[in-house]
Length: 144
Image (cartoon, rainbow, N blue to C red; front, side, top):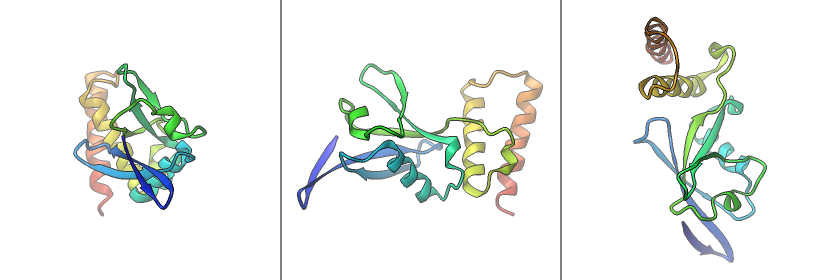
């Protein structure tokens, strides 16, 4: 965890891994910042409007995954984690995913693709093929 003194304020630095693991966002937060601050910042940088479906996840020193609690101080949740690394993930799938707009929709498609590749979605081969087709169709329709 990096700390730097900046005009008397402590600033913590962290990295947020996006849904494409190669894509990262470097962020800063102060000791009094709550989880909502960081999620709002990430969603603002990525132009995600529908923030309620997304969350930040981290892995503690015991290799246990946790969702960043939006109502609690960030530093208290990750006090023993070094370096501080979060992953942006879809926490809740919307009932009607077509209502998502722009980058929110793109992130949802990336999460679906990720979950299919890693075998986290339980479905038949036919359903997996249909989901794959929807991901490809949805991703291409974002650019037209």
